[in-house]
Length: 131
Image (cartoon, rainbow, N blue to C red; front, top):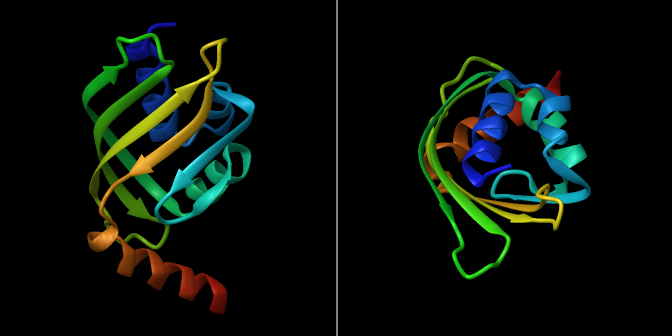
């Protein structure tokens, strides 16, 4: 699978909140490093993300891949995220994926500035804890 195909499949599955389709792109022991959720196994990260999401719309801006032979790709996209409580929390993000020899994602580092998202995210989490 080409880097662009992998990214397109990932973003389409992420936008649909399709857990099985997302996890099919990850190695079984893959980890995700997120500014909001911390580091955790992919199989734990995505159910948490999807539970916190009412809807999302993802717009790919660019896919970059290493030309030296390293199995690394990065992709830049707009994440128009609506939290489960209906609060909009849009941001622009770069994901950096380290790939296993079979082409599955071994590690995903999510990089974005949380200043515009953090307050809404934390407020939703506090409401969830009180419920």
